[in-house]
Image 1 (cartoon, rainbow, N blue to C red):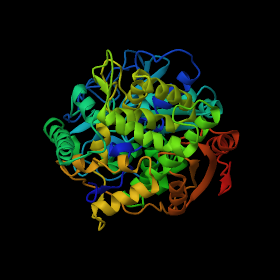
Image 2 (image 1 turned 180 degrees about the vertical axis):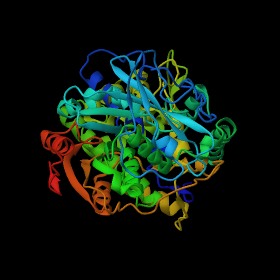
Image 3 (image 1 turned 30 degrees about the vertical axis):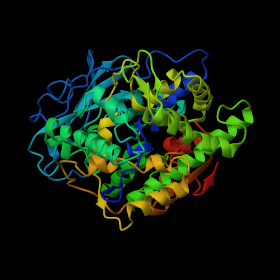
Amino acid sequence: MRTRNQRRGVRRPGGRGVLGRLAATGAIATLLLLAGCSGGAPESAAPGDRGGSGDGGSSSSGGDQGDGGGSTGGSTDEGTATTEDGGGSTAAVPAGLENFYEQDLAWEDCGSNQCALLEVPINYEEPEGDTIQIELLKVPASGERQGSLVLNPGGPGASGVEYAEMAGAVVDGSVSDVYDLVGFDPRGVGGSAPIRCLEDSEMDEFLGFDPTPDDEEEEKEAAALGEKFATACGEKVGDLLGHVSTVEVARDMDVLRAALGEDQLDYLGASYGTYLGATYAELFPENVGRFVLDGAVDPTLPGYQQGMGQAEGFERATRSYVEDCVDGGDCPLGNDVDSAMAAIPAFLEELDSNPIPLDGDPAGELTEGWGMYGIIVAMYDQAGWPLLTNALRDAQDGDATMLMFLASIYAGRSSDGTYSDNSQQAFYAVNCLESTEEEELSEEEMRQMYEDVSPTWGAHLFTMDKDVCETWPVDAQTTLTEFDAAGAAPIVVIGTTRDPATPYEWAEGLADTLESGVLVSYDGDGHTAYGRSNSCVDDAVNAYLIDGTVPEDGLSC
């Protein structure tokens, strides 16, 4: 299994990604909405399609990329050009990149917001070569503007454009009053030369497959699925496939900073977006403005330690959910916490042998893989706990509709089997480029370590990444090993004590690694804290972003 080619990217459940599009995209908002509603599951789990997303691949300099338009500053939606940015930054420009750093952004109306395209080179070592266009969305400040706040929701693979569209749920009104909120789809994601390797039906097969292969035949089938994914990416994507690393996205962010006319970048990154933020800070410490990194990743940990940390995080979060379920009475998992915890892997094992039929869904049946995602998604926010309890009760009665709906939220998938975005596929394109390291532990030693820290999820989390990444057709061109960001302005790092996807210990580690790191802790459940925890966290973040008031290091909320 996963004893070689451990990735610095953080693993998602079942090895299929980092923190998922749920880190800060529409999934948590969807859970919150559904939790407040009575009735059954909506027809579609996926957020609406904005349009403007084409296929992956490269373009000639200034040429088309997907449906994004023919020149930098074009529109991703119909509208009229209204404003231009650029030319206002006095920060240093890397040699050879002047044309990119000095470009103007022609913002056009798209609904109540504004959209533009940013041109960047596919390969920063060859800036005269082919380029791609990065899709941007700006929510203009509602009051007296003091600058731009760039947002990233994580993933990797999540859409920053969709994140900015959710501005009301992302930042406090006092922040959106003074900041233009700017979201961008990272290269290879959403509307920015999206990488698509598999058809929707093939993604269903990939995600629904048994995450805990039982014998040699299933091991071979899992390996074949992973190799099919990697081979398809190599055949379909082109040069961009080797240039969607975190380092290159961070370099895009600095081009964006200059095009926005800012000397320093003000930034709010969630989940994997904290890794992206830390990477930016290491590359451009003098350009760091007011940085907030929420749901932090510790980029210094080896891949297997990250995987184990996430396994332990999901174990803690699941126990917290189970305690709540049991305390509420009539919990479908059991009447005491220990037996209820044991019922979860038993339920998934039963799904492996006896999947539950699904009427009207192209997936056909709720498998162990889909069941795992349906349970795990509810751990990201306690608002999803009542939904999961009802879904488990229905599944015990032979109705898997709601549990598959929850799994589809995780995957960005609609009930008709279509995927609203390429986040699941873009994850691998990024994560398989991150740095690797050989591990001396045997497969069985590592498997046992996972299961020791997570009896519920350890076996599921110790799977399958290698089957894609070990056959990945390209290698990373640039990676980082240091993240102290010496000389950067204060960087606020937020950790939640029972965060399932980014364990609290990672926030401690990142804050210690960053020379100017300031740790804020939230004692609570769910993934990330700002905007979904309490006024202590929110007030500290708002004061820093608006007034530059640095929170007390070690603030506990």
